[in-house]
Image (cartoon, rainbow, N blue to C red; front, side, top):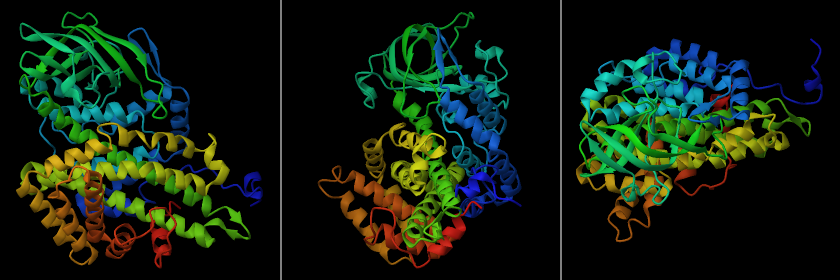
Length: 532
């Protein structure tokens, strides 16, 4: 067969028509190790579907043509709606919930996470309303009567984009509004006010950052007589008129451009209380815990997408009479990236296993509660530098918009910032560790799981020393990162002990903080990571 023009010009072919599950050995093994082995055939079909050239082309279109605000409605490119339809049909917004709002039994979280991880390698912006719809059910548990009304619409696998009352639609999506201009993360300073009106409330104020404004309803925080409270605010009032949400503008964001994020004013907006007055943070944090989990899954998927493209390029590009991947330094860089990516998918799947088991296992519930902020911190903050290094593997090609890595690089920081930035994650971890018995149990479990890794004992001892030091908050980031790395080592040890040992050597035993360290087992890492 004659060479193509690109092959003659030493340009690798496009990265398309890829089986995003079947070619990802670390994902396959991590999913199976955490209970989702029986889902392998369904995940393989899902991976093939999402790896088609058409899906990558649609992702480029959805981000090239961002949403626009027209009055009270947000208009999207058709590619965005296609992604919403595909993800809704797959149940990414509802597959972990039964129709009554109870949790589906294991391995629902792990199986969903594998799909979410695959989708994140293609298009991330539309996953914002998918994530928030799924997570909202956890907060709605505080108001069972309301939840029972909403669940038939939430668990529907139709995608209904029409702008009309949620009760008239086949399905619905939900968003969230917490932060305000004057306080940001410090939501206790919120000034948005809720006034009781019979069984409902009237809300006046604003939200500085409310994503997915085209959602059918939102969970928002406002100050009621009893304190900061969570409310359900639909787009339409009970009489069918448009509710008092006035979108002032859409944010012009660095990345995540297919997704709409807005500034909004509330003027006499109708809302229903979710949970008790004054319990707003306690209520909505149940939702936030799940959105943070999805941030970590998404960032791990972005890392995998970047690594796959770097490997695809390096195996096909000839430089100085050798394939690029066979050049010693590039070989080391790619192996180091593969190590980090494998650790990320291993630890996120193990964390999802804890969410699967949490309803009936208090120790796993404590593990999920304590490790979620740590793992979100580590994976989401790792992703931007990781994607940059993968971009550099393509040289100048990686920096131009013809290739997906430029978009992935813009996308990479968002998950570290949203749903609690780095310092907030560290503070939340420190607060959760104040439950001393639970913290002790989690650390003991990690110690047992890593007993064959000699470096782990000293790392865990250091974490325990820092937790009781007088300057514990100043060391919050250090504690958080170390705990995440220990958890990643434990997850790797359960499935690939030799790679766990390499990970510990390079991440806890004085390895370089930049990518490109040399590994004696680099070829094994690259073989496992190769997308083709």
